[in-house]
Length: 329
Image 1 (cartoon, rainbow, N blue to C red):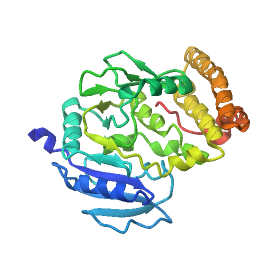
Image 2 (image 1 turned 60 degrees about the vertical axis):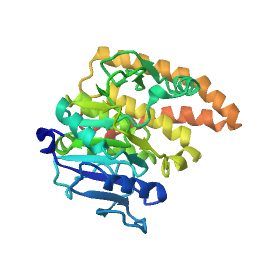
Image 3 (image 1 turned 120 degrees about the horizontal axis):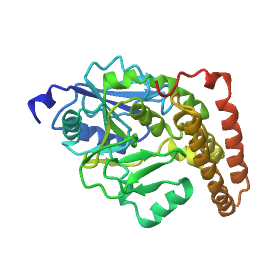
């Protein structure tokens, strides 16, 4: 690394329930092998859960309220480093992953660098078709962006990245290196309302897009060498739950409302465009939900979809939601 890049210190913050077992142990081993070592490895474990029975390196445990967002949107008083690498508990880092991300942050003067963990551009064709049909997630051909957020709340991904680094409007949440002062300035605690839905569907877009829209500099590194081992300890239970389609729809509506429709910099024209785009999306998803109801032999899938839209509308008009500070300052 260059002399300039070594001046940036970093610590690691991991959110976990402590139930990922061997997958989590492998992650900790990969952290011990980093060519640039973190100052601290702090593991934010949910209250009521026991820490794993193994110790791999210099990891420290801090118990915090349970919740995917609650365990990530924290004051980080324990960390005094310049940067915080925020990780899920099911990722595996190459030995030079932290070094690459630190270098990308310094060379491009970013506030945050996310690792392209999910590699949407490498999905099988059938998977690309599936995500396009079920959530209007499409590839784009712009060489200016890694990911773009659209007026309907969906994102698009670079179909053929030709460089390792791209600017981005959003990114996946399993692995991202943040400047500590940048994430503190965003006041992400204002977005903890999403946690109240039971599962914070759409949290990545809500958090990272807030950086982009508030004039922060977000980048994505395609060759960070970070692999998603996919423990799915929280998301599995959510997807198998009876209220999955309801919560997903309600969150989809509320995140769109806050980020795209009434974001603090909206005008009558931007609201019209966003409402038109989301209305098309909502109508498009009706036959998709109908097909899901038939496939699952459960008519509640369709009723949950409409109930989610209805209750999302009610929530965004509640005094508590309307009292939130503007999403874009």
